[in-house]
Length: 66
Image (cartoon, rainbow, N blue to C red; front, side, top):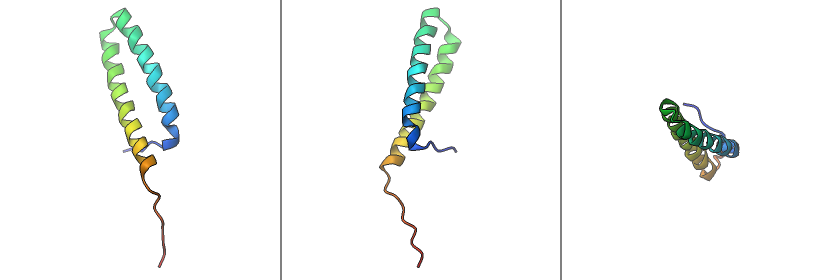
């Protein structure tokens, strides 16, 4: 499973905004298959945003050699 670098949160937000605009257009044009695909992608983006945000809250791990 790929992990998203927390530095990419802003890029994920841009992707989310673009997808929302594309979904609005698909609704206007009644492109039902497109709406379904965008919804799936939005779910994936939201999951990655949550994962990346969780990584930013983790305490750094110290590697001590004894």
